[in-house]
Amino acid sequence: MTSFRPAPAWLADAVFYQIYPQSFADSGGDGIGDFNGITEHLDHLAWLGVNTVWLNPCFVSPFRDAGYDVSDYLNVAPRYGSNDEFAKLVDEARRHRIRVLLDLVAGHTSDAHPWFTASANDPDDHRYIWAPEGRPDGFVPSPGTRPGAYLPNFFDSQPALNFGYARENPAEPWRRPVDAEGPRANREALRSIMDHWLRLGVSGFRVDMASSLVKDDPDRSETARIWSELRHWLDAAHPEAVLLSEWGEPEVSVPAGFHADFFLQFGGPTDGLALRSLWSNGEGTVDENWAPLDCFFDPGGRGSPRPFVEAWQRASTAIGGKGFVSLPTANHDFSRLNCGPRTAEQLPVAFAFQLTWPTLPAIYYGDEIGMRYIDGLPDKEGSVLGPRYNRAGSRTPMQWDDTENAGFSSAPADDLYLPLDPDPDRPTVAAQRADETSLLHLVRRLVRLRTTTPELGSGGSVEVLHMGCPFVYLRGGRYLVVINPQRNEASWAYGSAVAYPLEVSGVELDGDRITARGFGYGIFDVGH
Image 1: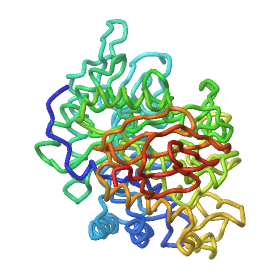
Image 2: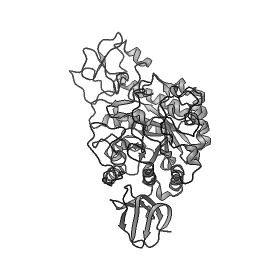
Image 3: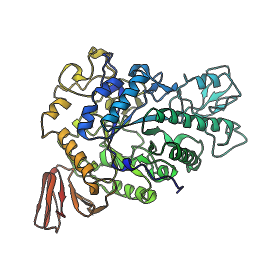
Image 4: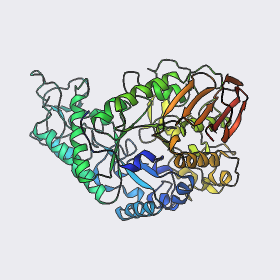
């Protein structure tokens, strides 16, 4: 592993909260969330106990892919507010002891970016990947005077920035080496973009499609080399800043230079099995290429924690304490916890696990109150990726209270970015704040327990005592965690004589036996 500066100390205690800005809070009454809306709700985040927010892309964009098609990296999209309003958000967040991370789209731009419009009319510009003649597989015809076609990175409207090819081929002259002029210019541009926002007060970046830079790079070694170079620059120029990757393979991305990587619904040789084996119940966002799977948090008890635990062990061994793995409840591309047949009563045990495992927890906005994945929504800004994969279901407006539009916006309902959950009994922040037995209060207590108990954080040891149901593990040699995600009661022999309950629902330690009722969970101090 390349020698990097140690991760900033604050990262080990991070509790991430992901905000999809267009759906969080609309202060302007146009139906789209904005910076001022986020600022107005920082008290909620501080009360909950999260200390690090990352925002989905909020740069200037035509929004064909919800902002992941950037046309200006140095200015924010007017629909979210002004650069000054963004700066105010960062300042107010700091006053609430909350850091703000931006989403950096590193591997491509919008086809409306001035870089691309210039490149489409200049055969000598190598900022993007151009085949000068014909249309090779996967390439898109040139929209300008330049002959040939360009390579997209995701949708056709997202041309891939040229970071070079790991392997050259004389028959394909567009395969520029990684040290060619175009790739060098793009690496410099990434540094300039990051430096610009870091100097304005952000604390780092979550990097979109971080493994996609160098093409035909089967072991990702050349892509890793680029991120290592950028990490060394970051260590010197902004030592308190962090890089999180959308890579989904921490054992590769963290040694490459990222401070942390997420377990995702894709990534690595298992195509995201670690995360899917926990949460994916076959509803919501489903890739047709995924093999059928019984997830662990399934009421029928058919799943196992083993795929997740083994993936985490492999990643942790490879990282060797030099970085972190983050475990999200969901994200803007993947189903919420409350999806399909999963009910509200199954959510507390999921949070009890997520907030006591030695990964960095990432709470997707609204999951703390149990917002639902909503089926059947129209395609919105590129949300539909397949016949069973509509990302809009995880992007609906935040549910704040029981006023008009659930307190999200004063706009007419037809003008909202996406429709609200139509269920009249939909959960809200206000209702759950008033109910100390609610999921919201539980999540708050679990966050506080984690952040005030080092053994339950990212650095505490973990010893798995029982891999089945109930799932039982010991943190820091002192804190016993019991998780039963199935509806049936489960028990396991355990010999501890003394156990002080810290956060318990439906779990009893009676003599030498643990008994967990359906969807029960318990956190005990056995060294009290």
